[in-house]
Length: 109
Length: 115
Image (tube, each protein chain N blue to C red):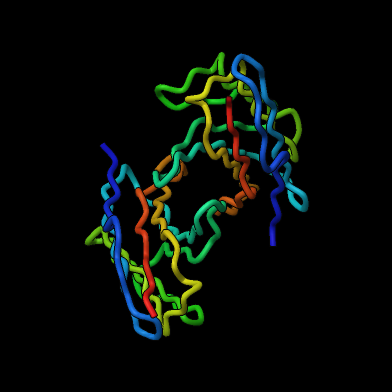
């Protein structure tokens, strides 16, 4: 079966750094997405990784290791507005998105 | 960037009635559209995938006769919840994908409340 695992909830302090991990086991791999979803809103795109390594985009970075079936989203200089759920999703061999359950990130002042 | 709209954003209906939700890609042609449902504090659940001009592919456990999907053009897909019941109350989100870009662009979602 296909499976994506990420922590259910994480807490971090404003101004700090947090890393949200995602491990996956899917039938094929055509890339991994990270989305941010605020409560009551639709997901918004953060990043897409298809090759191994780190992609940096402002305060957010995403890392991928295909051999380990592992990715992480790194958020720096945390702000209160970063409180949201972060969804990891893998594009499988049929180019269908397989979604993780999401990680709820709580930022404390 | 690509924009996807959904209408209505909120709808309240009585049990037994039908509700239609529209999803439009505003500045690109969406070869594939997806319909998701999300219950409070739960993950996105894919309901169905539709390609323009063909029948939708429903996920296991989703009743195709209850959730009617029409993808008549490259910019419009509709989801009709027929004979809605309170347990159908949820956040319904569509997304669209076009061409070689496999990113899904999400609409803002529709909150359905069935009384």
